[in-house]
Length: 315
Image (cartoon, rainbow, N blue to C red; front, top):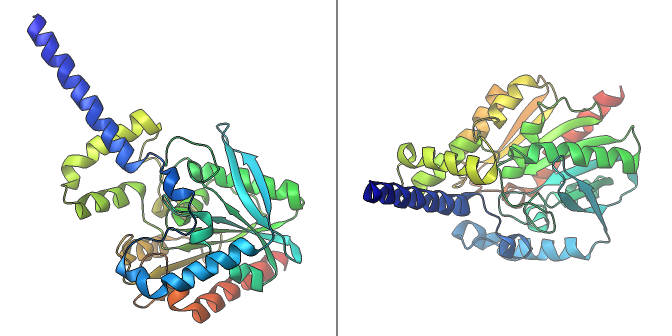
């Protein structure tokens, strides 16, 4: 009996250790990444635009800004950078991607709001940069942080401020998942660049990319998320959220995205219930670099979409 119990305990400990390793791989923060704005992935798709991105990061970091903060629904301190522009009655709130950096992921898009005179808040998502948190939850908890930042904007700029929600990659999934949370009338539109269709699907895709059978490993990843991150990976998804919203939504996706497949963004667009939706496909663009591959068209599409949403809101 003693030997049997010993075996059971050892197996349980091994399973616990395995689950923790999965949590660390998928959900644990990487502060060394999210605190360095100039860390650009070592991938050939970034090679031709690396210097341009670094130049834009330098330009963005040189702009005057105010550090701001708010509290999450579960008591975390969340931080961001506020860039005030002449149109202080309109603000864009920007959410970066998985283990990314706010300044890097918005070193392009931020200049669109600047050109249009719109104030913007570039936030550090929970468990990234200066924001607190012990787990990255693929938008499941982060979607409620969107509400915290909306409340901050209303308090800072006034209760009638018009708000644009914008996100890249996991940030795009975050703002799309927030769209089903009974957002206030202040939100005029959502801009989502290369969103995945669901946390579960992107995790399975990454597992396959790393040579694992997603059918075998995903149940363990799901269990590790429950144990160590406190989430059910299947409780929310962008594709389900957009079926319930009529907020104007713009989806942007590069058709050569290796990380979040183009088909995911296309499916989100097709399932979106909003009658004021649009999709921009950027030819030959990889993950989260559509702005740099087709800056003129990207800027015009975003600016026109935002203008129309603002006009309809004020009409």
